[in-house]
Amino acid sequence: PFGNDGMHYHDSINSLPNTAVTAQIANALHAASDHLPLLAEITFNAPTSIQKQNQPTVHLFPNPSSGLVHLKFSEIIIGQIQVVDMLGQVVLTKPLQGISSTLNLKGMESGTYHLVINSARSTLHSILYLQ
Image (cartoon, rainbow, N blue to C red):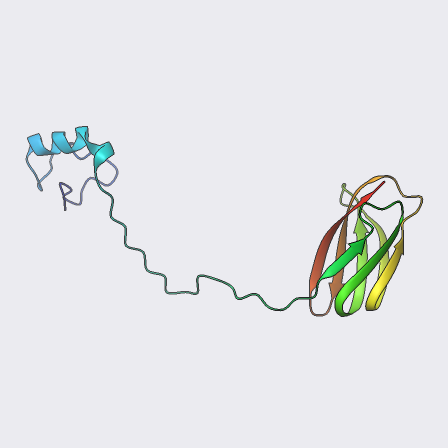
């Protein structure tokens, strides 16, 4: 209780009554309040981090692309890939099975696309630029 009597949490420290210190000290503490030390003791009883698990990775090439895109995965993927435009619309869905795949996006508008690769084990995200 360095000047705080426990009754001034939503009020200034020099508002009456202050039973912890005299009015003169409370006024001095209020005037110097931007210089008061702050002590915080924080205890975490829950985990403070999440351990990364080995997730598969994807490598796209070429990126940027003119339409033909090759995907290479770090492990066998069984699932599907969705190509999503910047409006959030799925413009292509293709099943995946294996360690690599090819997307033919020729004829699609130039721009930025979000690739979402779903498998039973994970979901991968990547950005593709079409020229």
